[in-house]
Length: 511
Image 1 (tube, rainbow, N blue to C red):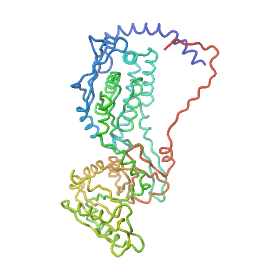
Image 2: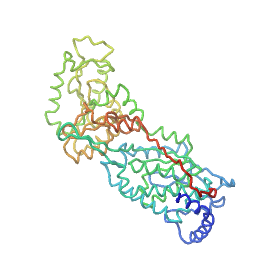
Image 3: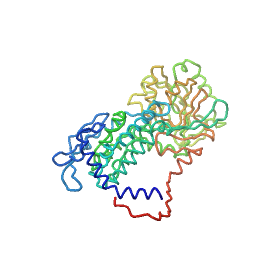
Image 4: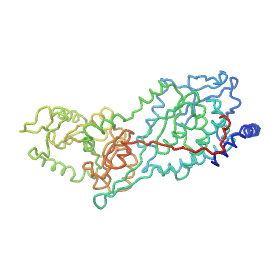
């Protein structure tokens, strides 16, 4: 009750306080510039001195061949020019997003210092927004673009400032807090990490031109994503200025792209970016996830290639017999289709059949199903990465069929590039006890359930492990409380406010 009473008293005094303070600000505004890179004076925006809204692409502010003129919502006077991007100009923004890997700008294994950097950015930006001259600047700018009372516009600035304050210092890295669950034997643990999606898009409405875009933008950045931001062009000047304030607070200029365009153009941008949503969705649910853990490609270091590994794999494969069903019918791919795929792979220069590659004999499996011996085909890494071969080599064959390749120490970036280009980021194993190697590979990949260590495997997940893909918000995990909560529930906020009203409550001034 004390808080509400005090607020009412403050609001009754607010008009006089606002006018008095604004007179002081108007005087000081002419003497001192704002503490971030802007040459905009809100009071001077008019038809004679129109403001300009630019686009931000890969760290550079730029105009456009097409400028859209906005009119003042109170008097109809043209007062803002917006650099609009049309369908022909969207490709550079597409390419900018594609340059961000699917494992993000940072994650718990890659560039973790960015969590601290973004905490510092939040602290500095919160401080700037707390300065009276900066707070008043954004409040009045909101008023000019989406007319509302000073108190209402100021409330939006205040909430934004408090949000940034809340996520200062260590609070950003706390968002990436992980958890661990004991395994089945000594040396085994499962760890759950918060992982980014990489390139993302944020589209926001006009009615809260500062609060909504800043809160969503910073949340995306905190978790390691690279966003392209599109706000309603009618109010885009607010985020044009706020991005400049964030840059002055230490945010790298390349971390966010800012585009002004219509809805049709934005849709074109989203469609052309190679998101993997439909792949993750299909692979997570089709066949109850049976196909997601089979080893379909093996990247083998040259040291393993010089070991007896391949010979032992061949021997073990030869033990499999139809009699005991250690090899059996393939229900989704015919023998003919698998042998045809084998023949196409063997046409790639340097490829060779390691073992298998023949149809099973002396059986009664119907022709509508597949029946081949366990098969492994070697394809050189350089050939796999060629555009003409990549789709063929990474095509899923849901049977006893795998690709094997080899790499040298200096070719690890090529392996990581291959992982990045794949569409389905499902189960993986990183077989090594070298922690630096594990950190590098895990930090630059986005596979779902990933086993790491010398005993790593891709099949037979124990019931106590999260099991599912990564890299897509619709990826469905199973097996743990976290999986159930994240897949089968969402957050719902219920705020109780049942009173009673303070006895001396009075109607405050209109806002």
